[in-house]
Image (cartoon, rainbow, N blue to C red):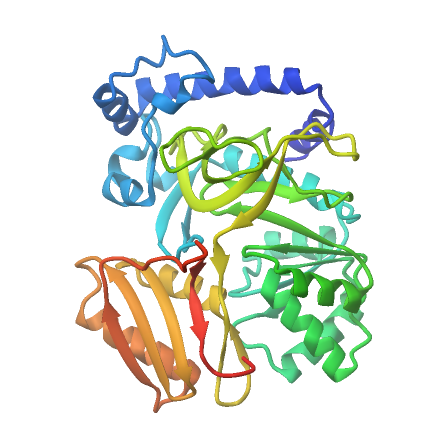
Length: 428
């Protein structure tokens, strides 16, 4: 990872034309590789009558069919390229911005590239490699094995606030851990950071004093940014990404938009007709991962929208900018003991545990009533329903009444945003 990271520190300042030429070469190499080594892309390109060796890059890339989450679930077996086996690949399952689950496979090299990109963008906030971090996150991924635990302890200690249950006690415990480990970077879901900031003010906590704050995973709303920044006395660095392709874009110290990670990704903005959206207009995000050949993501539709910014940044980086990412919203849910549960964390945890759930939305009507809107396949049946109900009652109370509503799809809000979780309890 360190080798990739050192290279990435230089490429962010390369001339724009040099970056475009490199991206074009890598895009052509990937698509031609996929055609020769991946049954899914051979099938799709043949159906579209596209010869990747005669295609004009990048001008004719829009002739290649879009890859959707539904495609990934339907053609999982043939999306793995020749020479790779699932047992030899790293696996991730994601809920995504729409609450839909997909399995993703990638090589260790691809993972190292993604980690290197994340470290580069972390440094924009003022954090330095090796400094401790604090995460406001659901389902904390604690290191396993003596070697990994020792490596984490020595190189980059981590403090967690589990967003599956935020209470006064858990926040105070987080503050005590902070005082011991002294992390410099506070990283978390946008809304979870907002809830933490409110708790810090409410309980008069002074120990949490980061030198950098990074928000991720969902839209950072203007009023949330204002409170977080006023509470901790510094600017929030917002970022955008997804499990399928990693980090997509991040704010720099100028906060004029999010710089796109063009070292790993080729990003398109499309209008409703599938044509490129004009700069300044909202477009559907379609992303190609240039580093994952084991399970290529070529023209992958993320189901979020953003605005392409046609201009340069005073920071001097030549990485292009995007603005106004739209798509992710999730309320906190409330337990009877007053603890708050991050909706995004609960969705991710549920989709990971129940493969048969393709999409999920949680609606909390009051402390005793909840509706689960579920898009499922045949593998999520009576036993799955019973298990999920038990899990929800274990978290929200044994007398919780749950309405399971099985639907064909979960539509976005009128503003285009998907809501993972909706809390109808006032002040939630």
